[in-house]
Image 1 (cartoon, rainbow, N blue to C red):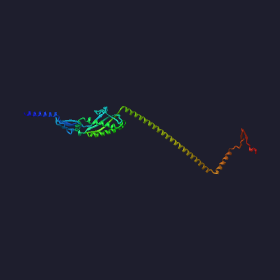
Image 2: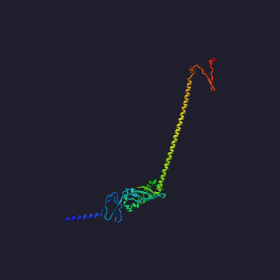
Image 3: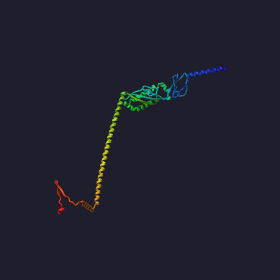
Image 4: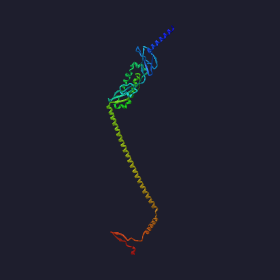
Length: 309
């Protein structure tokens, strides 16, 4: 009889455990998530359940999970460019201040405020991305893109991105959404405008090349002028040195002659005169010339002084 009671209690316990298990009173919250608890009576617990094991009231309380990890929204028509992002939306279409079409690829990185998961759920349920985030992102990017002409957008890309990011961060903070960053990855334009840009770039490159050629020719001309000036200056200096050398040479000769004149005395000159006469006498053959001169091809005889005597 005692054994039957024990078996009866065991069966009751097993039934109770199975019943409790089927009601799923335990809630296990994974890391990076929050569980929002609401009851059949349409009230929601203010504080969502954080990462841990929690107990709920079966049949009365229901839980819904919300992801509070960093998430990304991708706007593009070429999702294969971004293999690390699974879901994507159509690329953004905007207009410049001069009414030219602009197409933009953008990535918005955000997360939910971990302490406000229940409030967000009460506000928009789980459609916070479609109802809160995406529409404001599109409006903000369009607004700040339209401040520039189409030709100015690429050069002001960082300025547009900074303005959008600042505006969205302030707005999302009021809606319990944490904006981490905005990335405008690509700007595209109509084919006509892209062709005009390409033609303009080609023209600018050609102009730069021509300007470079003109500058190169001008530099070469300047170099030639400088070279000619240097050669002319060298020749002038050379002529000046030659002139100075000649002047110095004449001055030296004149000084030399002056010194010689100063050193030659009358006695020396008399001696040189006698020496020359002696040399002349030694060279004389004691014969007088037969003819003195020629007159109209006729020789005129010289008078022999010795014979006359």
